[in-house]
Image 1 (cartoon, rainbow, N blue to C red):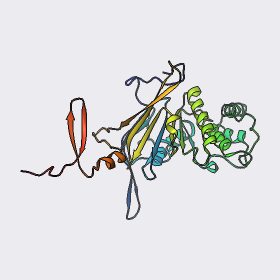
Image 2 (cartoon, rainbow, N blue to C red; image 1 turned 60 degrees about the horizontal axis):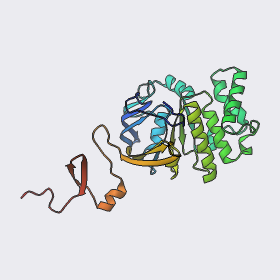
Image 3 (cartoon, rainbow, N blue to C red; image 1 turned 120 degrees about the vertical axis):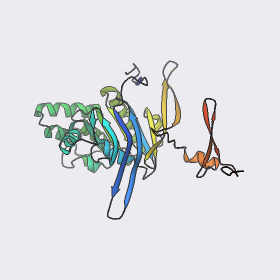
Image 4 (tube, rainbow, N blue to C red; image 1 turned 180 degrees about the vertical axis):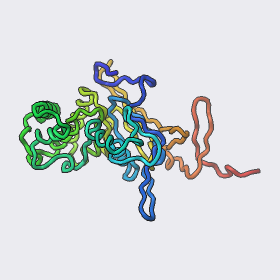
Length: 306
């Protein structure tokens, strides 16, 4: 449920997650090589949430986004979006899913927009493919472009717009068929910081006004100030979460809590800088200490029998 401030109030057991990944694996095979991109990943995303996935190159974040978009299928595990099981959905249903249930924004504007069409025509294309009436497509295209701040750019072609304007047009295209889920792969990767702020402001406003669930893959270091939650990935699994809390009672204040993610098998990834600071290698000593668990470096002699 949304508060008057636009924030989402999500009790722990209020409703099942809108996106639910459980023990998800993705293995790419060639003639003599196997690459494991996802290694038992667990992830839950609430309906109406705006969250980001971050991680180093090769951590599996883009693979996960492609699976959620219906562009790739997992090798094993479970992944549902709403009531749809993406592991068992056939190709015909996946086409329908990609057309009306999920919108996608690529980093490269050339993959988002048709260069010889105007902004209005680009937004109309997904609706025309769905067979919607001409008058309806024109009205919705103009409404969406107005929502992303481009109401005066209807007749402009991509080359007549700035990079930020092209990405905002791409967001309007992605939302043309009113999907409940919007995925964005590095949407500000080619933009300067000021223009990136404008794009994120548009995403936040659409999240608030339309209730669309938004998942962003990014390297942007300021992303924690722009989304509800940041999930970090490492080695094909989720490792940590940063959750932003906003307090409106005494003015707009924000605090950020960091959590290590514990998957369904009890695995926990400790941040690499913590391990380096404590000089923890292949093994660590763990002890239950009242209401918490202590993790310490292995001491000389640990594991030896008297």
